[in-house]
Image 1 (spheres, rainbow, N blue to C red):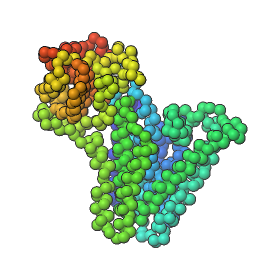
Image 2: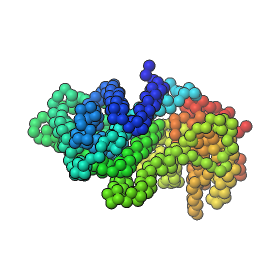
Image 3: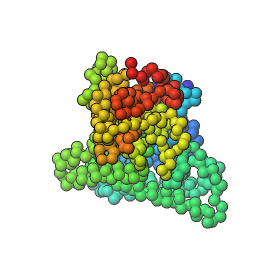
Image 4: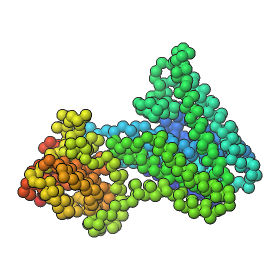
Length: 566
């Protein structure tokens, strides 16, 4: 059975073999080695992608440009003369429009897995306490990474080795920027674009009309609303001249926009084929952004509440950053300032890796954490904080963000509201808890909450062993707000907790960032504060219990006894 664990096992095995092949290509420096490795990888990846799309009714995705460029590359390696114009056109197409498409499509997130935009379904019947959706998510994220990132890496690495390790020195006129752009665009891109445009114009009138293409996915889920993922048009073909014109402008506009972006890619490839440093910078940007987009995809798969934003704007931004790295580097190389070019490459070429480290990899190290235990020292694991939410804070009426992602790892005392009216359905929501109430001046209430936060013991009831820190604190004459982050001990998961004080009420919210379940962590944390403040004079709190939150307690495998003070 092709289950999630088996996908991961065979996928990583193939990925390891692929890396061994690419290392051989780089260090052996043999044209025969490069040709064999590229052929084996390209054909196996193409076969895998065809089978993947066939299972989902998306076979027409295989008429896209990247598949054509892969076939052109194979033909160039086996049939063309190595320093010839056809080989240069194939290299420029692989490095430029196909490699650069990473920025605009951000493929690992949306293209190959549009279902990532849909919420992760809650299993029925409920999951047992030891069940977890993570293996399936990991397999899905790896499959997406495998589908687009790996072919891009293979094409870029082989193109680099062929151009800068195997080709003899080329005449300057053959490497002129305009000549390279024209060569790749007219020899490789235009034949595909013309054929693809004719195919799109004729498709509604053929039996293939029911099947989706990349164009259909883009115009429906990106440019106009619905969602891609399996169905084609499904509507009747346009009848009459006017109806055809109303349809035809879309594929024409699509191809024109595609051509303009491809010209940008060919321009980048022209600079890469002239100077090795420029090509290394371009490939580094592609690789780094591929990894960033893969992390984005996994986050979207694991957290339906996450909204990655406008991918077109993000792609233009990342593409502009790549040009900001390449153009000064190209100018320094043209002028012979190689030392300046090297410094520029080091300074800017690895900015995406810094962004990746800061956003996803950098471990939290709260000063008040518990000392590492024997298991933590023996089985060192990467710490996964998760991205900090950007929509926290006090809302209208002193409310906080509700828990609306459908996952049993969040509690909030603020019901969801629409145009100022609270949703009555939230009264029965399993995540809704009672706010804390106080009968004292605001300043005294703030002091009590701050004293409770400071006295919170990391590791209480087996949670938050990684410590905590107060991230934000603001106080006015009428209201106050405190935002605290808590970290798990061994894996470094970070949870967010907020307190909003006003008019004798403390709205409270505590939530995990990653995963589906929290194993009772947020219930234990909320209950500790409820019991701590409730024991003080002037405070009224309602500790959390299983009654009213039965689904949360059942899914996380906990009882009232697990979260009560001993």
